[in-house]
Image (cartoon, rainbow, N blue to C red):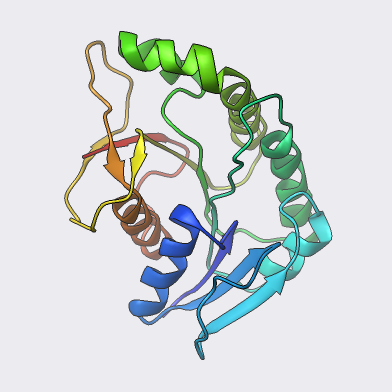
Length: 209
C-alpha cells in the first residue's frame, strides 16, 4: 500500500485516478477546490484547496509516496493555471523536502510533441487549444528544469470509454508516430501504475490507445 496524492482530483482523469488507486488498496490524498464529486472512503483524505497555492499543496503531499498532477481547465483562452501550479508545486516540494515521484499530466501537443501531431489535430489545436497548450508547455519547462523526480505524461485526445488496460506508450518522439484518442480510464490506469512503480522518471511519455 502506498499513499498517493492527486492534485486536481474532482473530475475527469483525476477522479478516475482516485477511484482506481482506492480500488487497488492505496491511501489517497485528494486536493481539489470541489470535493463534492469525491467518494466517501476510509482510505481517502480530502483537502479543499488550490493547485496554485503552495501551502495547500504542501498539506496534501506531506508523507505521500507519489504525487500525481491532473489539473485542467474548461477555458480555451489565455490561462496561467498550469504555469502557476507548476511554481506552487515546486515551492511545496521544497518546503516539505519531498522526494516523491512527481507525475504530471499535460497532453500530446505540449512542448516539442506539437511538431509531431497530425495535420487535423494540429489544425484543431491552432484554432481552439493553442493558448491552453502554450501554458501547458510552460508548465513542463518549469517542472523539468527542477530537481524533482518528475515524469511528464502526454496522452492523446481524451475520451470517455471503459478501461481496457491496454494502450501504447512512447518514450521518444518519432516521425510518423500516431497519437490518437485514449480513454480517460486508461490514462488513470497508467498514472496509478507509475505511482506504484515509476518506470519513466525524467522522461516524457506519450499515450494512445
